[in-house]
Amino acid sequence: MPTFVDSHVHLADAAFGDDQGAVIERARLAGARALLCIGESIAAAERARALAEANPGFVFFTAGVHPHDASGFDAVRDLAAIREAVMSGAVAIGECGLDAHYDHAPRARQLQAFEGQISLAGELERPLVVHTREAVDDTRALVTSAGKSGVRGVLHCFTGPRELAVSALDAGWYLSFSGVITFKKWTDDALLRLAPADRVLVESDAPYLSPVPHRGKRNEPAWVSLTLARLAQARGVPVDVLGQASCENAARLFNVAIG
Image 1 (cartoon, rainbow, N blue to C red):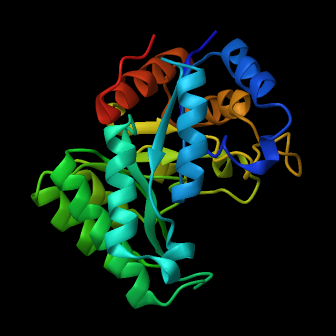
Image 2 (spheres, rainbow, N blue to C red):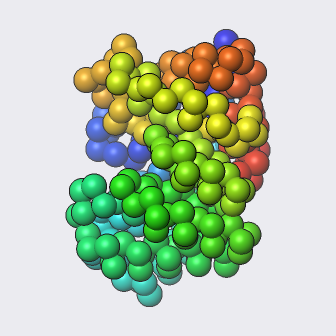
């Protein structure tokens, strides 16, 4: 059975309130060697931390402020909380970034929150987990600058464009692919072949973006195996080889031991 690491799952979300344990067990049985539970807010990070502590060596967690919540970002309060989470075991900062599609927060506030978290990542020597949508130019500029400062990270749920991928890879960053690549509307397999084997990650983004044939259902980490198979097909490599690479890449980026 191919193995994998789910590099982005919102396991602390209320959608998993009743069966987190069963979801984790199904992920193990499907080949998962680790799950990265995303703390996209300070409150979510606390819940993610509890899950990581209850599942040592298998569930890891992050802490950050999502661009949708940037209107309420307070640099002193929130960066201190993220710092504390890192001191308590968070392996990355995020989910942070920029989103001009929904624009739930003014662009200036999103930039302030993102720049603050990039700076903290550099100070604490932790990678970033980045959400970006319809904000190519600003994301390219910030990722390029971060890379020059030695900050690494991943563009999660990556769907393009190519120029952003190239900039991220040039900065030493990683690309993570979700169930979106299994959708019928997906046509850009060339993008899936762009990153070298040592910069590719896979993710569920659960409870969102269930892969085919589970569209319309609550997503879960076990189904990353379907995304992995589609990615391997596009790249023309054995699925077990790509799965092992995803584990090694996650271990390297997040500086964790994966069993």
